[in-house]
Length: 438
Ligand code: SF4
Image 1 (spheres, rainbow, N blue to C red):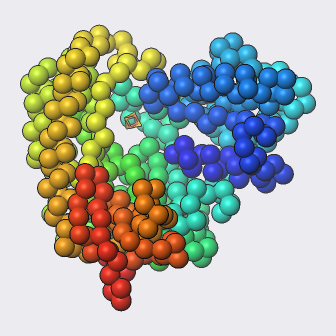
Image 2 (cartoon, protein in one colour):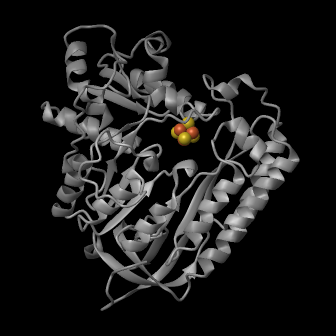
């Protein structure tokens, strides 16, 4: 989401006549787009502001802070870091050019924590996108879920879904511009609920999100991925849509956070282990293999050894392709910050390592199963590790490296897997094969 916000901010600025400076040192305006999901990221931004200030002494640029830290901290940022000129909240991205103008005009503390404009401008120009082949398309912003450990509902506000026709039009345009893959993104994509369902075909009982998936698939975009999905809103019609359309890629990211009902309740996740497992079963029973990934927090306040064992059992049962595991840390401003952080650091580390070991073992088996099989890979560029190798993602969202040349960048190719590594696959390109399917 942050990358997408940066692309959008850069587009608004270039429309207003600004252009990106080659280096930070040459910039007249430096804007920090910030994340506050973890308290440490928040502290980092103040260190970076201090760095810019000290090496640009005597020729200071205008400094702005946008994103979640800006929304949450507001005017206090000016006290904390007096060299900051602008604080731009999460709903003020479209107003960025006007805010810079105000700051350039001499306003000392330019602050905008206001609501979104009635007509948000989501347009992102091609030159500002992070990749010429893969594009992020936000479909929903904000979150209504209020999990007790999470700051997002406070920093991003309530859920707001983009209009159907806007999304479909954007994907068609991206397809015409030569993009091969889009990621429909949002804090919870499957909570998608636009004000009007116009443009979505009616399927009996189908959720707006699965109907949107079908509409986006019908654009003919070569590969479509979506992230992140919220377990409670993950209905089987999503799997049905994926089975119907090959261009809906075979990957679902479904954060579970804990395998203990007691802890899920304390986290206020709105789902039980049994609900979650039912959804996983639907994914695993699909007509083609769908990769499953997740997020897990260990050491949430009150988590006992038994709760943790439940999480281990759930991970064993779900056989995730990969998992992001986090040690719980108190996030000020969240309901959970009022709970006693009673799992010791040593216990959190031990649980983290045990879970990581288990996941690595599961992953080794899953990745090894790919050896000898062919996958379709969107080639994104040269591998960072070897100039002779190209790298990209499979439709099941695995990093795949293979021997190849730069001319392949932007193409979807078939790769036969020869070797499974911990977090990636290595293979050889299969020429003459149809670069389709998983
Ligand atoms: S669903 Fe929960 S964890 Fe995800 S963004 Fe919303 S509040 Fe945060």
